[in-house]
Length: 543
Ligand SMILES: Cc1cc2nc3c(=O)[nH]c(=O)nc-3n(C[C@H](O)[C@H](O)[C@H](O)COP(=O)(O)OP(=O)(O)OC[C@H]3O[C@@H](n4cnc5c(N)ncnc54)[C@H](O)[C@@H]3O)c2cc1C
Image (tube, rainbow, N blue to C red; front, side, top):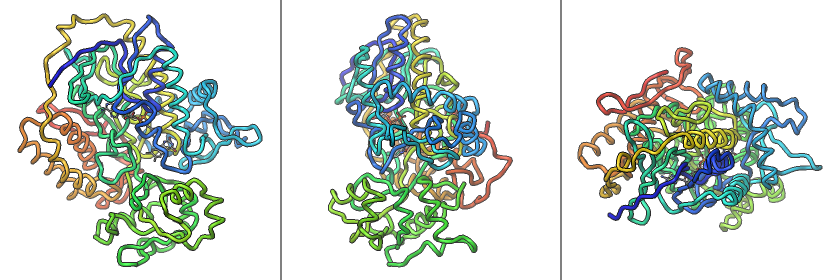
């Protein structure tokens, strides 16, 4: 394999909302005429969750109080802590609550136009929020944010390296001095005084996901190998999305208010079978309209649990879902209440007035990740993490609209802190940093059975036997393959970190549901942590 080495001051890995903000801030802050480089797998603005248009509306939270309902940073902070069920870091949550409004103002100055009515920004109330706080530009919010930040970054002279998959970090004496990636079969080592990981989550390691294919947990795994601490890895946001026709779209909001008929492959309507006495179908469906991701926090959970159990019990459709039918709803109402959804399906040849679709729980985003402090610094010197790859900001659950806010607030903080570090840090002699380590590429095809086990063990309904079976499969593959390539290792490590954290947490809390421990345990109001143990094992433990 050919090998090339390049050099920059601040390396930003990724091209979503978090990376775009971090690169812009590192260059804007620019204490010493720094060289800032964005390296990402696809084209900037075309890959990752931020620019993934798959819903009626993509929301970003800030307590602007445009609705005049008494919102404030203090109320926002209470909502984050309450929804996080004791596991969101207060000091990180404070930054989102008190700084998101400033970040929104800057985005508006950079040209982002949020939806408005009567010349007033429109704010909507999303799940986990007591006030109307989410801004959007329909489903295009993330596209608008990334476009504006990318344009501003390029104007300031940020360098771009597209088409490179960063798979490992360059380490010397326990400190990070760059990252290593693959581009068209060539290995590229990028030496940097500060590295900001902003490469998103790991939904794509699950067969059932609504993520861009580049989100395979490379960030979590390379940080772990470098010795970083990760936190809350068991908390993954999973919600219903379309599995047939083949398209990327989630089922949320009004689609649940239409009182859909849910049927399994035997043609049986099943939701009522899962409802405890005293809880009605109408109640759970109207709650589901408020909260797309599954969470045991609300009774909307019965919708996701019923769908999951039907599929896991072998009564799913041939595409691995259940039938979702709103053909009883008049066309005018569908067009009026869910216009983007209606049109999106129509473009795929599906008329929701006459055709049913198939849906299943799909992984949307990770709540946990690489543990950071208020400046987005990780526990490894030289390494920062922002956006979905980072952890601690969100707890066992999060208010809808907070991920995009997290990306802006910590992208800002991490970009500036990394620039400050890079300005201060003298290069070590190149020879001292560089090593000749080559990335081995040979066995990534062996991963298919593991991915199926990941789906079985770590989706909505979790239990000990399935998680242990997944861990056994991971160990067997490692045992059979002594020289595991780094790409496969990254998938296995991420899966193992989630699995060990999920096994450790013997309770149900927020988005983590253990069928064998269905209740919440007050003793476990503490975050899980993962790092590399003394024997090189993946070690999960409580804070
Ligand atoms: C369908 C859907 C709806 C959502 N709705 C909302 C919502 O309404 N409100 C909200 O707040 N959040 C929402 N989220 C979550 C939110 O979109 C994400 O958490 C957030 O956009 C993550 O931003 P990010 O910049 O951290 O990562 P991303 O936007 O995912 O960007 C990651 C970038 O890193 C690149 N990358 C990945 N791996 C590598 C690698 N190894 N090397 C180089 N580059 C790499 C990717 O290609 C991409 O460019 C939604 C997510 C989905 C999928």
